[in-house]
Image (cartoon, rainbow, N blue to C red):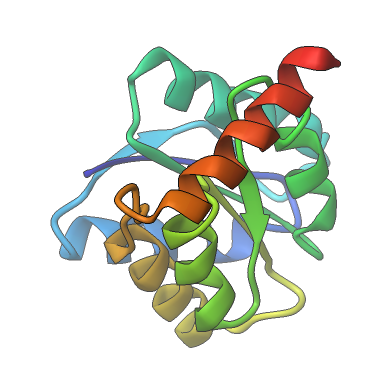
Length: 149
């Protein structure tokens, strides 16, 4: 799977580990920044990840900031991106299975690297349950909300 990864300066300390983990798992990483702990704005990296997913350059995306909240909020402003912030494995897989999330937001100050790896693995292995009518119906309603805005 092609995975776009974008982190701000707070997410940078775990970036190399996440990229190595993704490579070890057989994924292709699309690097959307940043490359240091110098301050950068999380909306910029969230935008880069969202655009990579929407352009088809990546199948899914991962954004990381200190709490995960800011990156999730920014990513969700991009039409067509459904970003879920997850700090537990249930949310990581359920957000894909039920809500067709295509980007995962993590908080580097909230989860350790071992949990981050498990969340990423769980998120990437999950598939939308397109055969379940209630999930498809709900996704259509979410998409309608987006197009009405």
